Image (cartoon, rainbow over all chains, first blue to last red; front, top):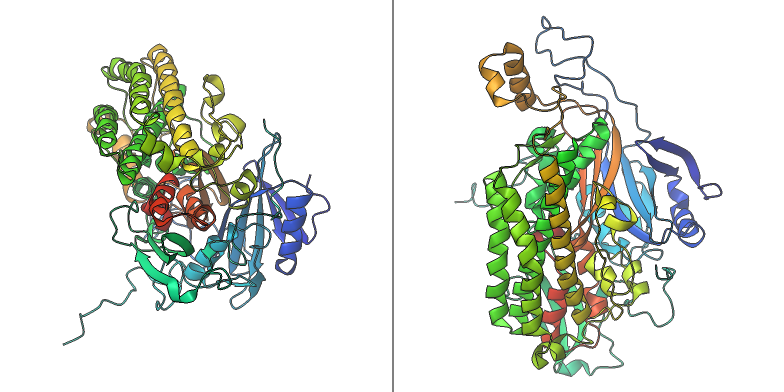
Length: 180
Length: 422
């Protein structure tokens, strides 16, 4: 089904969903191919994910520990289990939808390090406009060639990108508190 | 099914270029000295919430438009990363505050997909029943406020009369009128109260005649017709390119409803019609909403019939690692008490992975992209908001319309700003 898509690095099947990991340099090529040849005519969603710290903290929790709990260990919250490592810090996930008699969904993933840029898919699907602006606003991912890459949800003069994992909760400056 | 158009930007598209969401002022068509730039919103009574449109007017005509959003950004997705799944269920409801149960459902379904747990049949049918009641509720609010904005004031009272009946049902089942938090991972929070069946059936019977009443008020009203017919058109190609879904897409002639094309819950077992209209104008969007309320009432009726057969069946899975033990057990069983305490405080682990689940909410494709690192809290939650996509079509729809029609068009897109800004 997905043979011949340009730039595919890896195909992952999990939970009944197909994910194509795509070389970020060839994302527009891959998207154009999927739209024109495979018929994925709608971009349902596009979003960023920050994997900073993925797998470095112990996964804590109570259940799913079939072998039991070490109640003697201080602060034990079950077994630490390290999730599969991710290649780079950021992922851009594209959720494609085929609106036709043979409906289908497909996810594309492109991996980026901090400071790396990716080409905009606005020329392929105009709906990517606001979604890419949102990913830029919340994660600081720069989409090359986007016609209007400015903040969308946060105020224009906001500092930092709030959905990054190193952006703390409650980290926003409180106005007036220090002013006299 | 209609022939599916390609999404390529074709000759004669109305989508502005290069930026699809900004209608740029064309200096060759307008005398710049005549242009008046005004701020429409964010605090304007007729923009369905805090939407700000920067409009360039040439006389009464809209010559340029730019939508500014973010005034209701509350950081739900960031907050949910620090809440356990069990606690997180309360958040998505407040995102799209008119079709709250759709967001709740999609989040719960995403968790269930990662956990790979089954829900009892009763929970499936009740979820469907409430989702359809919620669609009626959302459409009624849309109808009342949108008609109000075009000047049909009395419509508001009629629509809110039936809306109250729907809210009474929610109150009876869940104890709350909005933001019910009734769907749990694994099923429902509580059993269905005995009085629900008769009341829900009565509403399902009453609803079609109520919709007839609304149409009787509007369909032959000359002012209503002139304010809606041919206003804010969106072609099927443009709708797909702009990622539209739900009533927007169906009003533009694309026969696409996730309940039919990619069925979830038990939608493949109920009988209902999907309305499709051709012109993609405000009037057709209104017609789609009306027909959908009738279809939803039909589904509610079928759900109640099925639920009555399932009386006495369990409403939540018995997987004690994920669901809370029954309340009465807490007084007699130490194990249950521990389970209850641990699920509420530490939460349960959800296997590592990422899933995307989408359902047809009142506004279209409501999706949830959930990434888990195997811990008790989501690593990343992203909601695919149908209103966010719908608002991107504003610039395309209002091309060359009058400023008064801008209100009608913005209302017909059915944006809920909580859904747009999240």
